[in-house]
Length: 159
Image 1 (cartoon, one colour):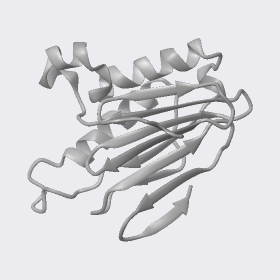
Image 2 (spheres, rainbow, N blue to C red; image 1 turned 90 degrees about the horizontal axis):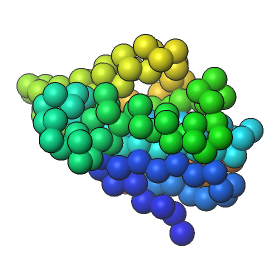
Image 3 (cartoon, helix red, strand yellow; image 1 turned 90 degrees about the vertical axis):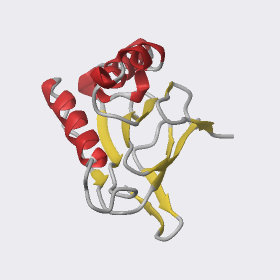
Image 4 (spheres, rainbow, N blue to C red; image 1 turned 30 degrees about the vertical axis):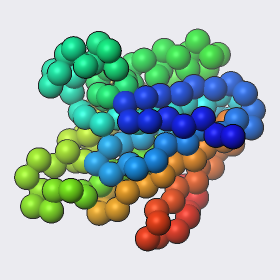
């Protein structure tokens, strides 16, 4: 049975074979952190780029924002026995779905805020499956490098 990661939530596991899953990644972005050699993985579902939008919400639910969620994810991964240099970081989501005129560009802003924080911490995500106009579901299995993505209109693919 997978562990479901909702919007603004995160999960870290060091149980080989455990499955972490997040759904409905539209403009939201998933930070996927893998260290299969250590048997550790983490998943964060970010909704908004910066906690300055709503500091109270950031205090209650830090995973909602890139600038508060990513540091917490990295801290939990370290507590699970994984250093930053052992991580492979992957990104998925940041689509342009409910804003056809690109007025707010939430997906793009989430992507840029996430990349900025990761780069500042010498973490360089690869691969990325971002953008477009469709939502994604992410499924990862602790201990594996491959991540399964899916979309009802596009089927499943591995990255």
